[in-house]
Figure (cartoon, rainbow, N blue to C red):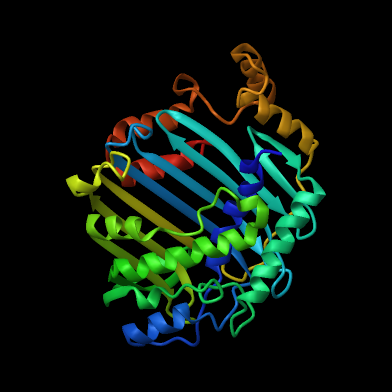
Length: 359
């Protein structure tokens, strides 16, 4: 079974783990109190609609000639403390005029993968492996609330936010929130990145063999030297101090002496945005209709990776499966128009990913 298929479930569920954070009561609290409450993890988020986007712009990398946009969205709901939640996530990736459409569904005891417009039943052994890895990880890192949270993952944004200040209020998904903006202590931020990578490795077990266990000291040093600016915007509920949105923006300029070890990267920009809507409201997550056997997906992926030994065979398999990769000439016109108008504006390119499925 291709390792990337096993890692798909792992990578899709991680944002849902991070989504579960909250805090205590409302009021016009101080910035420090708001941040402490928001990231304390003492109130479990049981359900909601997750929307995560990631945009990357890099100069000097041969493998990335234009902006990359990633979007994951869908409902999730808890089925009990420490248990794998139910979720139905759609994943859209847009890069270089090409699009990828995928996703995953968990009903708690069974799972499905979405690929190329078709849904496939996940092999029970694979799903159980992922589920057991998740629940083991939750047990090992169980926070005071027993729920999924930044704290349960060993991550504490409060330690790497610098000079945080309230800048007003904003509506996020119909909820009034306090808007807090902050700088970033890069060294402490990278320490939490290492913690997350370690959790991901433990969560996926053998299925996460392609996930790095952490950043080497040399890589961390290069990143720290390369960060020109970094900003985090936190939106927390006025009444409940529960996270509704977190946005991270990082700008890089790699020193000349480090560009070779950075694969040729000269400069770059990264934008990450996580939003939670309909917090703790009921979510309907059902088994998808018409799911195909998982073995069909394995065969099609193998053919697309060249397992059939001929480009014509791979092309035939791609056509039969409704492949998720679409040449630029066949990509949704709205998406192509959006990317063309966006040019090198990463923020705009990031928004274009939502048009992959005609959204």
